[in-house]
Length: 373
Ligand SMILES: Cc1ncc(COP(=O)(O)O)c(C=O)c1O
Image 1 (cartoon, rainbow, N blue to C red):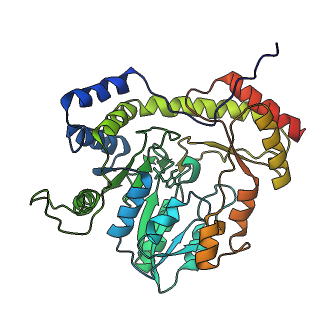
Image 2 (image 1 turned 180 degrees about the vertical axis):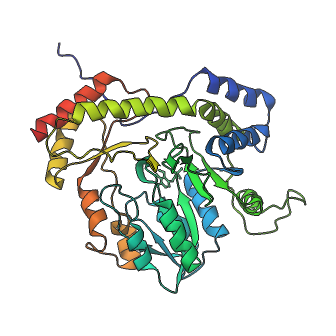
Image 3 (image 1 turned 60 degrees about the vertical axis):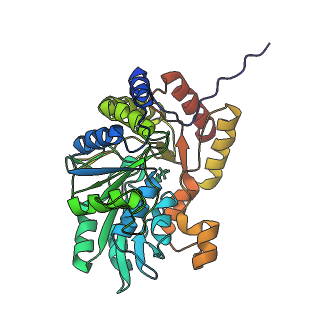
């Protein structure tokens, strides 16, 4: 009988006995929410990324929404962001009535092009949401300078970039408030969850109130001093997160090894563009492995081969402004952000996770070689 080909999944978490031990500690303590495990997770995370304050939340999206509230984004305010990201990057301020203004990206890094951001500023602009796409740090200092010049808030969507270094220091340590996300495909996970880092004690207190139904520092369980949300992270999730932070350096090193192996295996293929290399100012934290193929037709042919071989993939990432609800609501059309649209047509995420073995990667390389050679 013919042997079935083993599937190679697109992504997967990397957990061990430490997470089990910490989860058990929570279960046995009976403190399943608002317990000490959330504080421990926050403290460990803040230390890891060099931020003075961290607030755990139920998702990256929740964290971005809270920063949109904290920035005072309201109805009709324009917010400049990148089209080449996950939808939550824009949704977070649309919830508050903010209007998305998409600035195009740099074709090499796939991050916001600061010149395009500067050109998009109007008297109605309130904020910039910058993304470190696929774990590669954005041009933070240039974006900060634009924000300072025009009196704008800067929100760092670092959901894909925990552990990345900008100018030698981790994202989260630089000043702008940042959000990290912990869905199971991320470098570290809590199942569902996120973390907001801030350098302002006042903002930290506000975030803790907003995530907890607007309760104040003082006052009782049923006193609400502002309009809040239930964006709390449970202690079970925080326990998994603490175990993951403790080993984050190892996770990142293992992922960098997997990426380096792809670099070797794919180097000889014609027409494939690999993720851009690190430089002195930008050190990527490996979230996904996304390659650029020569054109859309080649990408779709590659996908047929990957499917045949039971290899996971995804069309990371469609441009947000062309999502059906965005077109309908704001009238966005093709041609508005040509660099992003071109990338969206040609980029492809390959299987990538901490424990991915060489054999799986070789099969990916073979499937791509069948199309590219
Ligand atoms: C760039 C970016 N922003 C925001 C999010 C939202 O995070 P979550 O799925 O935890 O809500 C993600 C997660 O996929 C992301 O990649």
